[in-house]
Length: 133
Image 1 (cartoon, rainbow, N blue to C red):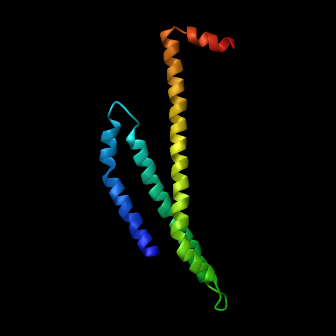
Image 2: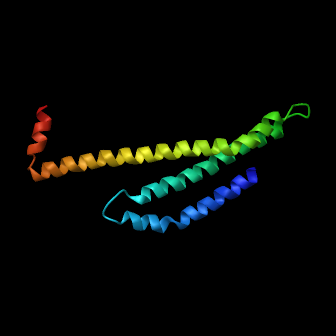
Image 3: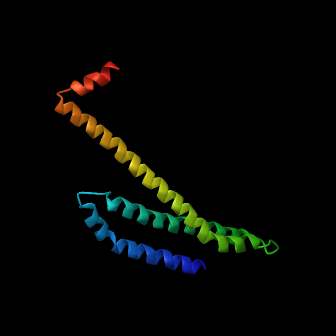
C-alpha cells in the first residue's frame, strides 16, 4: 500500500505540473479568480503530502531499527496502514492554510492599494478623514 501511495503521489505531481500552463493561461483572463493560485496550492499540497508521508515512514523505520527482538511490531503494522491516510489529511490541512493565507494577503494588499488610489484621486482628502478619527 505504501508503494502504491508513493507512485500515486509521483503521478499526481507529474500531471499537476503538466497542467501548469493551463493555469497560467487562465490567470491571464481579465475576469474571475486567478487559477494560478489554485494550481500552486494544489501542487504544494501534493508536495506536503509526500513530505509528511516520508517523515512518517522515516519515523517508523527508525522505530524498527531501534527495536529489540522481543518487542511487538503491532504499532508498525497500524502505521503502515494508516500512514497514507494520515499524510493525506496533513497535506489537505496544509493546502487549506496556504490558500487562506494567500486570500488574506490579497485582501490586505488590495485594500491598501484602494486607499492609496483614493488618496491620489482626492489629493489627500480621503486620508485626512481617516487621520481625524
